[in-house]
Image (cartoon, rainbow, N blue to C red; front, side, top):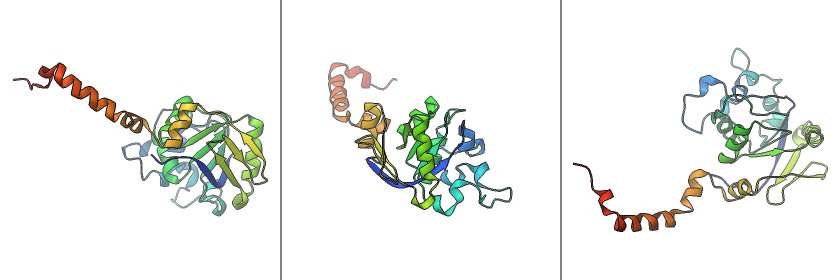
Length: 206
């Protein structure tokens, strides 16, 4: 998993509450088990018109936000079913950070497992960042995970809280597999001792 340290990028405003996982990635795209390729279907129903063309009114289709890597959203982001495809689609599109007043718990935890930093802020701070994001191509925001700060286009700084363990995993680029591999030597040592202590467990039946 790619490490997350400092991100300086355009922030896109999505001032909607209760954005659920079906809005993020509709159910017809859940057949794949690959984490790549879903970015083109992110926010499918809002992002495209009935004829398949881009909806010019949707924020991520506007020229200023096509390369946005930060999303500023409303409360209860990621609610609905617990599909991990939602953060897969967000990450595949290129978004690395989502700021909102609140998140659905399962979606929030799935973000960390996929290299996305979800930041919970008081509504008044989210509103300020939303106003900053409306600036379009000038909505350059810097997220510093180590120092737990967000710096807006005007230089104003906002602090955020994060669980220390989740912070460590993002800084080091560790998902659940990566965390397990950190214990590779201990696992190998245990297996070697087990083979000596209980060799009969390695005998194939029959």
